[in-house]
Length: 249
Image (cartoon, rainbow, N blue to C red; front, side, top):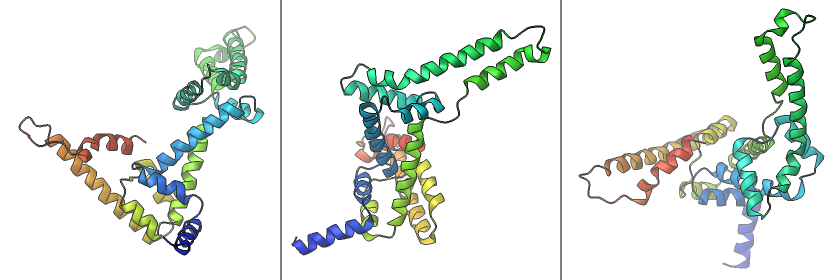
């Protein structure tokens, strides 16, 4: 390839945006490209969070709104912290304010449970009223902020894909790959499309890929019959995992 051709190729990639490199790599990895990008982005974000932000006031503020991370991201925090050779000190630092807030929450709960006196109306000393107040005391004002970051990342890359949907190289890479948007991200993609040609393109290509998965699944089931002598293909072997990733996003 000449220098001119190389420079033209770089220029075309630049025109698609700096995100094209991540999108192309995600498409070539197979599965849902948005899930692939979000997964890698989240891993880097958690690594940064644990390395640089255990004492950051804004991190503590955001974490207090959700009273900690969701189970999925809590497990990811633990795995990444462990792989970095830490015994959990960074996680402990992030959660110090959360446990302090929880102690205060339960102090209020204890006060509510002990509020049954002659000065309080019977309705306010009832079990139903106390339960409601306890739940209010322990309820959170927001969701896990890593989940929120993931949603923002997904939406950003959905918009980037829509921008280049008519691009020849994008369509070539997409159609020639095993990439398949998961159900949730496909719905998100469709909801953000404003061009009818793009809508038709993504629906048609998605439908074809779904039909192929159905065929692979049927062959997978059929070949498990005791009378079958045919070997499973690689596509048939991966049919169940692909379906779980598609519907389980």
